[in-house]
Image (tube, rainbow, N blue to C red; front, top):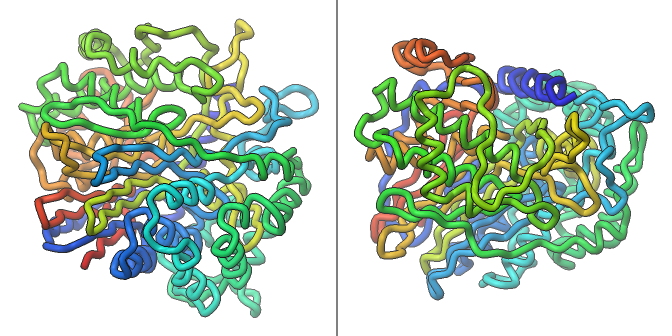
Length: 569
């Protein structure tokens, strides 16, 4: 059961990467930018970055800018995120020195069961059928999460933060390249009835990159949210549209108005661990931060820092540390409100040292999970997690920081729309639930449960607890490896952040080591000589966006594999 789902996920992710131009290697390295400025934004689309910058110039803070950025990204990058999706936000408050995580992960309906994606005969439904079904959609949490963060830290009126996005939706926006490629792809999410209606001109031709589109329904939805806050999405008109669309054939879901109205984002302290001379703060479960921290914790017990990015042994160590960390993360992590997740044990230095000692001994077969302190047994995990995600970073004039990763899951989510936006298919991030011995996977579906996520937004602090950098990436389950690679490049190999982002991606999970096109053939040959099963140019490309603080100056990095830009004033 799990093997079939994972295989279909890989095929889908790889094909989407090719069709949407997501798998290209960064052939033209951008020089890193160092600018003196009051505030900075790095985001996936120029209009989104400009909207955030306008809010900052008007006296808004980092959270205010994040609201404006997300509103535009939902319009111009709907294949990646939107009002119908979820997000994780790491926030640093310069006044208090506190770092908090805002969890806007979607939740399953109260009627969800471990058999959420089983058919009437008790067999797993096909993976594509699951994605476009009503059962794939959880209660969207991004808007509620941003509303909570704004209530805690906002400096500008909530209603004022949607004006740029409303104007673009009403008056017209130029279709970006990645959106244009995604909407013309052959995949089901881009070819549902809703998607076809949205992406088709009055003359019957599809819109393409460079065309001007409008979305009056989206502008109307933003108006409701601007005036009513999160209730504008989770109650009333929009909530009714979402529930109705989820309940539509084929394979309707069981999301209710009560599920929508009772959604609450969660706020927790960040999960922080030392790495070399720094402290890495990121998202606790059910997000992916614990995987990043364990991967780095394993590498801290190697000599990767003295080797550098051209050393094949350094990449072998990274690959093996990745495989060991993913094996633990995939087995142990789920929603901590429902299962015990041994975050402390997985990032315990003694445990990570024991995992690092396995690096020379782990062969080509997928390594199994270890036994970290505090762990309890679960069923075998078989989660399939394609990526349709985006990341942005904001630093405001007061030094407050946002590192936020946001998603609708697959490209265009479930392909179903309400209110001018796509609905998420996040519930397909759950694992097929039952192992051969009858035990449930930690990430099995359940009522009001949040599925595990790989989203790992990060803020990095120096030894004096001063924030020095922030970074994150989209990329499905590859996010953990993408973020860790950039941190290794910047911290261990002393590269400018842009050069660390530009490094070829290597994602090693289970029995597969995926190597991005452009990796040095000598490194690929060395990995193969170690017995690792190397697969070239596989999976979704990263979209790393980040910033490094140099006093009153900023060093920005935007992944050349995508369309990210930096804006500052």
